[in-house]
Image (cartoon, rainbow, N blue to C red; front, top):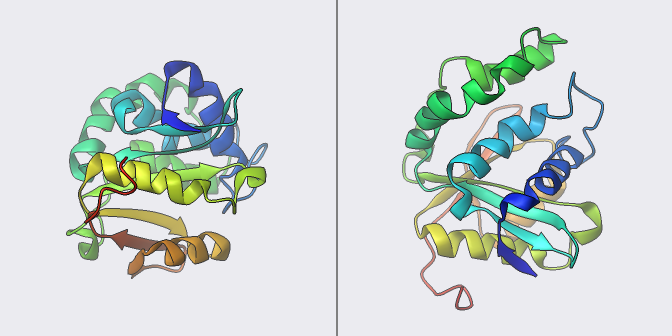
Length: 197
């Protein structure tokens, strides 16, 4: 079932995040700590906006999630003030140039988003363990998040993740901007009740 996030779900959400962080594949062991991907792409949202986090529960634990924010610019500013100090001590010395690039998300200047995203103030992250993909759960999670935020939403994804791109295209996202590494997709605010959610 899909339900609201609870604090007891934190470890499971972090596990799903790292196990899907390599363009949909398992990123465990790729960085100096397996906390890196969750500290970037899950933890700040669970800490700052837990009311916009929803999980797919298999009856025992969270096996997928969607989380995000209604206001991307305000979220990034708040994350710098309230989230970064909580995790900064873990990352004194990057283990590689690639890890240093990722840590720039936490510690570097807040990047200016592509101007094409201006009409899509909310953003989200969604991940499902492979065994729960292609069963309609991703669509249901997106519906739940969009019903909660009720504004246009964008997301960034690894351009090489063609399976995720096909899913987002089927759902109704459209391309807003692209770099060689990242593709930004957006979707308008829902015009229906999204199945009463």
